Length: 199
View: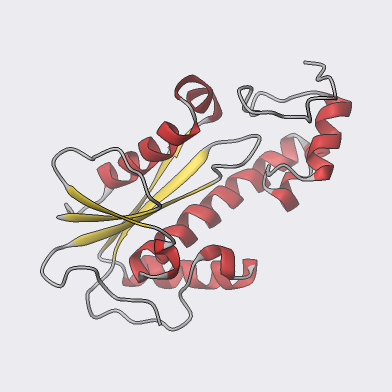
C-alpha cells in the first residue's frame, strides 16, 4: 500500500507527467490533492498497471480527490524550450488549475522548477511511493493516451493508438517511409543516425 501523505499537516498535491520520451505529441502533467484519509490498495505507478486498470482507476481518482487538474505543453513548445523544462511547465499549468491551493508539492523525480512560493519535495520513484503522485501519473497517462488515440485517426500510419508516439520500431519505420507530421518533436532524434529523414 502506498503512503497517503508526506506531511500530515500540509495540504499537498502529487504531481507527475506522461509522454516525456515520446517522439510526437504533447507532454501531459497532472496535479492531484487527495484526502489524508484516502486509501486504495490498487492505486500504483501507472507504468505498473494495465491499460484497463488505469482507466478503471481514473473515475475513482477524479471522484475522491479534493482537487485535480491536467496541464499540457505541445510539441512546438517542447522544441522551443526542451523537454525537461516542458515537463515542469506542464506541472505548473496543472497546479495553476487546481481549485485548492496546495501548501506542499510532491514531485515525481529528482528535479523541479519551483512553483511560485510553494514548497516542493522531489521524490525519486514517487509514483510508486505516494498515492497522490500515483494518482497524478494515472491521470496524466490516460488523458495523454486519449489524445494520441484521437490523433492516430488523423495520422494513421504511425500506430499511435498502440505506441502513443513512443519510439517503437513501427513508429520509426513509418517516419522513415511517410516523413514527419505537425505533431513530431523535431528536436528529438526521430530516426537512428544512420537513416536519413525526409521532411
